[in-house]
Length: 171
Image 1 (cartoon, one colour):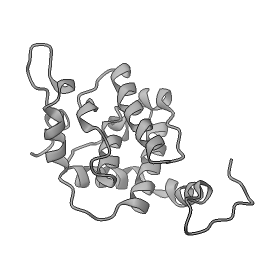
Image 2 (tube, one colour; image 1 turned 135 degrees about the vertical axis):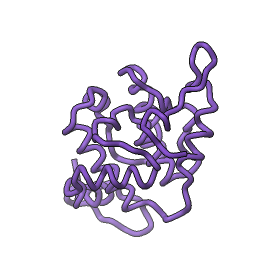
Image 3 (spheres, helix red, strand yellow; image 1 turned 60 degrees about the vertical axis):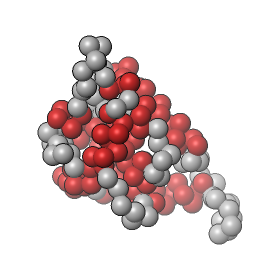
């Protein structure tokens, strides 16, 4: 709950003001704008908001904002099942906690892949990105390729799975 008596000073981090600033304008971004933003920024070809339900895209958004703080090598970019999605969201929630981001991820709702839940979380992520991204260069495909060399993204037979091909990305 947001405190109405909070006294914000520039020298301290006030979670109340951070939270309220994230809520302003967060839910006014449409589905098409979100998909266009994700596809352009990360060189993807997502056609539906629900395709982001694995949590991998969200992890990469945070990696773009906080380079080197997200353990992308632990993110399963090829996740297809709920239990794989949950691992990705736990990585994301751990980052939120580490960076003192006052957001609890409703993992069980997002994993179901329902439109409204995923739309609202993507809208929140977009607003967070708009407020905190510093404009540094980000090689989305290169970061995914680097992560793809980890054990999470190797099949039982040793073959590499390619998230970029799954989403029809240009490499």
